Picture (tube, one colour):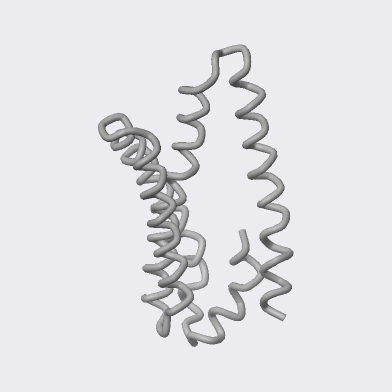
Length: 132
C-alpha cells in the first residue's frame, strides 16, 4: 500500500513508464502464488521457523527495492517482498487457528484484520509523506 502514491516518482526515477502496473502486480502475484507453499512448509518444519523465514524474505525484498538501480531490479525486489508477505499473512492466520479454540478464534482473526486495515490506511499516507 505504501507504493501506491510513490509509483509515479518510482517510474520517473527509473524512466520506465510501461512498468507502472507491475509495481503492484509483481508483489500481488508472488504473494498469491507463494501463500500455499509457505503453509505447506510450516506443516513440515513448524510454524515459527517458517514464519521467521517469511519475514526475512520480505525484508530482503525490501532491501533489494531500496538498493535498486534499474526497474527490473526493483520489480524483482517487489516480487520477493510479495513472496515473503504471502508467508507472513497466511502463517499469522494459521498460528491463530493453531493457538485458539473455535470460540475465541474469530476475535483474534478479527484483530489481525483490524491491523491489516489500519496498515492499509497508514501505508498510502506514509508513502505520500516519504515521496514529498
